[in-house]
Length: 173
Image (tube, one colour):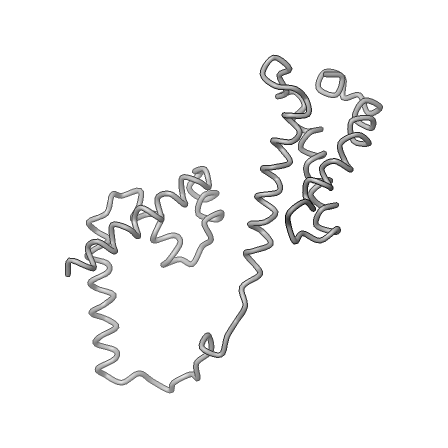
């Protein structure tokens, strides 16, 4: 409460000394996370504790529960960030550039694109907008969420639902 009310650095220092090793152990337990990433997680969690101290309500939960909830959420976010860049490439990912496509392939590509646009027109406007941002403009889910001022989870849900609907339409055709 001293941290929230008075931005008491001494109280935060005591809190940091108590929780930092516990959060690091939490990060390393049962995972392949490196010590450097665990230290990064500790810093991120404690920064959020400092920034969000005013949101702590001792009537709802103990301080340790609140801190571990923040730690769990930050750990999940860190795993997602690390996995984003951990995609191995194979020889099939690379194909030699062709000078120009054959007329039949161009026609087939155009027809497929037209068909996908027709199917997308049958989606709700919010799902169509998200798919356009992510797949046609090449934006990440986070970029689309920021641009549309939506929560990241909402963007991901709309993408998933839209793709499921497109799959059903495609299987019918």
